Length: 245
Image (cartoon, rainbow, N blue to C red):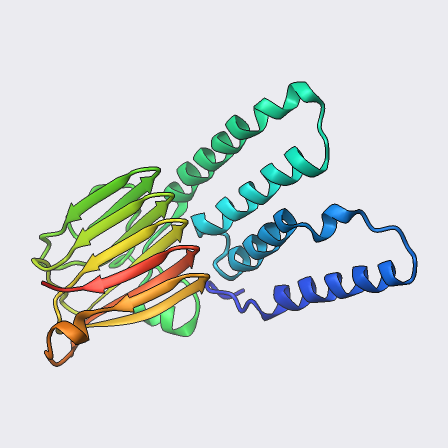
């Protein structure tokens, strides 16, 4: 199974299920009204985007938790004493997910990414949770974080922004060949400040999101193919701004 999966299969399954339920409803079969509610839409979007990224995207999990929270709270009418417990439980689940996600995430080289699967080698293998000046690991959850990278052999890392914002300054960093930066943005923003000559390639899944590379309107520097920054992951109800100064 590919590291970055083709989402056509799960999208087709979702459309097939929705169509079948609508048909059954038109034929007079009772279908609960909450099946077509907006929380279910969020859950379906979360499943779709999560499947494409092996559920390594924090944004997809946030959508599923938000949809599940409101589905249970407003539509399934849980006992009164259980209602106040839903939000703390959702936070606990999200925290556990982030902890275990960081422990199993490993960097992957550009050759593997281009072929569509993770390919760890002794040379590139690195757990983001471990400190390394050549990798970054940023979690902006309900907060704002600014980070300046000074590495002259920057290799990438992992940036998560959920209901928050992250500013990553790479103007004083350098890339020897290529770097892979995995991003998970949900209801938040990410600002990347990169040298104008870097070749930034986008491999992110985006939904109701904007990705704006402002470097071209600021400076007319030619891109250097030997300085390649590849963005992967997902952006859901958020945005990425790429700029220079």
